[in-house]
Length: 434
Ligand SMILES: [Zn+2]
Image (cartoon, rainbow, N blue to C red; front, side, top):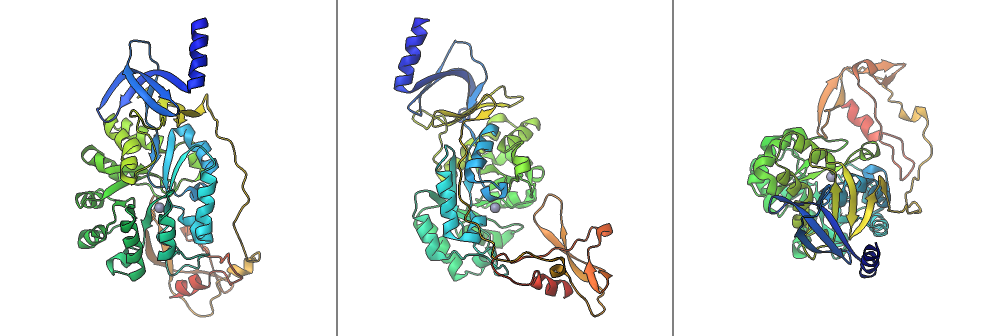
């Protein structure tokens, strides 16, 4: 008893901790009962043991591409939920907030994220505004990109959505890419459906990942051209089913991500869901974990430990490899999730958001027609995909106005300008009628 007391007291002073679990060694594809020794937040030693071991210890999960804003939470609150699913870090593009607030928005995310023990890794948003059709609150140009990428806490140039700009050598786009190359920071891709020579040109420009592939053939082609492919399964787009057959052969060049994860889903699962689904399909445990825990660290040079001696003690403890229930999550040797609760504190922030328009009236959304219209343009949404199709349908007209056709599931949508008082949906209105 006294011995244990003294040992614990010494451990506390030296900030050491010994954990006895089955260690999942991803690199060497091996599992063995181990004593994992942690000292001052780092992995000090991992040795085989004969002592009884319960549960399994392994590196934590990383979401390789997620916009924290789509969780509708502050980064600090996102972290409090993510750790209970075994997530210890993310690669996050703050382009949603940047669209509204520019660099000030990016700084807000960085500042809030730095207040909690969770390993966020933000990028410099490459496409703000997202398209020239958009009325955005800010513009991030090549000079801003240089300012952002020079920061140590900005890890990469985030998703280059303007692939037509890359293909046509748009000056501003190419400048942003050149700055990233000069500063040796990876460039993320976003090129849904881009194939053949166009895909090759996009990759040759220096763009190294894509999370937008929605068919196996497209992903396979891009993998063969040297791109890293992320399997996205989030709240909006779901590509797991189409892409999981590629894991077996290409796991060293693949990662998992959500892209967008709404709060109702984040509450229940995160990257642990990708892992569990893959294992349930019989995919090799080590290949799945290579994608979930290791590949993002290597590709983006993330500040996350891989459970090697000298690494930050970032890890999770699970019950067993069949159920994969997360029992504990540790970051820098501190448990941020244990006994079903997070130890990360809530942070209060003052909102930077701004809405500068008046309240809208029902009449603001009227689409009046005073001529005979045979067809209207309709955006067809495809379940589980972000890509859409154009179809033409007969309008439903009531009292001289186009109204939603609920029976056929054709609903009116409007874009409301939040930055100034303008008539809602003016552009949409014109487009619908053409
Ligand atoms: Zn994205």
